[in-house]
Length: 343
Image (cartoon, rainbow, N blue to C red; front, side, top):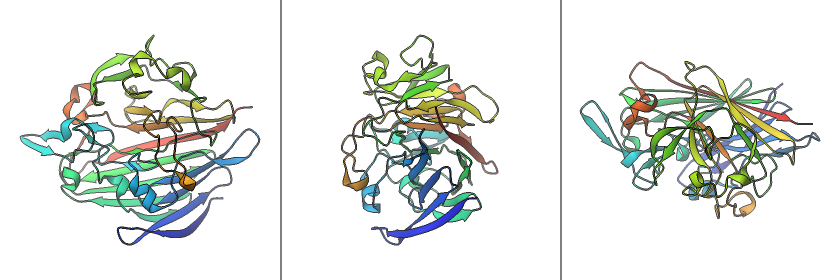
């Protein structure tokens, strides 16, 4: 049985209120905000059956609006980077909001992570909806988005549908930072990745080429302690892992990406997704971001596994398509986060 309980809303300093819902199925639980579609907390048991919160978050709307780490939020209208904030549809060039090293990152400075979504309960979770108007952050078309978070046993399902009345690239991702120990660092976690290709990037994070993971600094085919990645040559420019891994083309079926695990707590999280890529971000820039209890977060305190379309796809269709959604088409993202405990 899934129990759903509204929590006391927060005041939005920009006007109005931010709704909060707690969803608990007895095994795992989440707190969801209407602000940004944020997962503020996610509880799952350790090897002793003790539940703890495994994602980084804040204690107020003001703190969420003051940070630019996208804590727990939905990133969009286009997750990751679009080079120079520009792309073309036919003969028409669009200029997007530029908010990172001359690029448009995660949909711009006022992207989906800062919008107040409509929120309502489902039998096993919560549904959020958002309308992004034509030219929002420079993107063409009126875009309608539906986001479902559902709890099934020890699984969190994230499903997103989106459409636009003009051709527009769409890529949405869930940007939670996971720490399976509820501790100050994730560097003791182990990460194993099935993907056999990744994207090399330039100094601003724009893809350059498709590379094989085999025998590279990003070969994580076996469980690898995150601490051991610090200082590897391919990761020095980004101060740790902040790279996109490519999934095999399986015609949008759910497939296993990999597994994050903690020897300390015994918890593990396995990610399955239908998206063509997953960005892995080790929290390299978290230092000083204000989290819960007004505590400053530390570098590497959480790990993001971000299923998404290919970064800069509108300008690099040769990698894996242009991520364009035309009128009458529906963007469909589904990911499953499976939480387990090792003996």
